[in-house]
Amino acid sequence: MRKTITLATFSLIMLFSTTLMAASGSCTITTKNTTSFTVPTISSDRITAGLSGNMGTYRILYTWSSYRTPTARGTCTSSTPISYDTYRYMITSYGDPIFSNNEWIYPTNVSGIGISFYSFATSLSIGTADNPTINIDNYTGTSVGLHPYALIQIRLWKIPGINGTADSDGSLNFDGFTFIEVVRPRNYPSDKISNIPAEDQSNALAGSVTMNSIAISGKISLVPGTCSLDDKNIEMGTHHHSPAKNTTPWVNANFTINCPEAWGYGRTATMSGTTENTVTSRSTNNDNTGIIVTVYPYNSIVDNNRGIMEVNKNGSSGYDIQLAWGDSATLPTTADPSVPVIYGQPQIISTNNFGHAGATTSQEVKMSARYIRNSENVEPGRADASVEIVASYN
Image 1 (cartoon, helix red, strand yellow):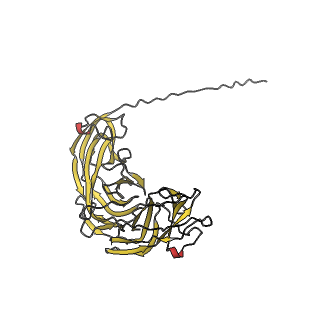
Image 2: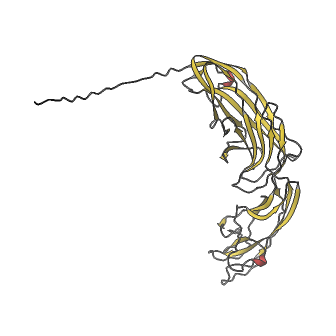
């Protein structure tokens, strides 16, 4: 018997759809904190920053471990549940921060000195409104009680650049930094706050209400750590061109640096973490160790790997100037020096430990200069060049 088997294919298509309804909440802020905080310091809080002229290194100068903001309070109600989150960001008067060492570091009113703010709740550094920290709070429901506050670590930094001077009393006064803490629906702009106060309509973070606005400032004894040296004119002498010689003899261009008090850096003020914001202990500063010197030419660089720069064109041509570290008597007569001056790059000229007790130091730095032949035709005349030298603790 033959059997016929019929195979049938069934296709089942199921369509699911969800309509997300926008929700609107009404928020009443009962405690909004608009206040200020001055970091606590004592007379022994002294910093010698160092690293002036170092264009690539960041260094922690001082840390306040945990500033505790006041608690703000409010209530948000809605007909359907809404989730709210807390956003934290900084407003500054001194330009955008740079992200380095896992921190947003802001410039201050003193060049070469920066400041950062770190949120313990999110384990993130606090950026501007473009890069806020977001705390995913348990603020969800139709009647939500808000009670945000923050624990903030505040740090002073040495940032790349030549260190500026402190105030006439030797202090770094830093201000112009405002910590902002706002609340906004997690699903904004689908979910919104319907009654945003007039003063919050222009918030940098749209659709938010401000809970905390705290101006942070401070004053601490700051020694930039930049050494002084006198202007100096090096007479290179009169030379007669000889086709057999590509260089003139080395001439000593030594200079003496006088460095200020070495108070060290890196102290931490451990704070209570309570609203009293008392300091429970202070660590000892790290020692200032070593001296760096950076040479900046006013003339164009010809070959930075060999320490060669152009001379001013005062009728002469055919020669450039070469600088090298060391005494003229020890440098090679014709060959390139083993340690040329690399323009714009710090050179460690001392590794001595200067401690953190306020000692000063003076030191002679040995540098030499000579003329070196280039491809131009030789013409007689003056052949001058100028450099700026920046020296500081390392």
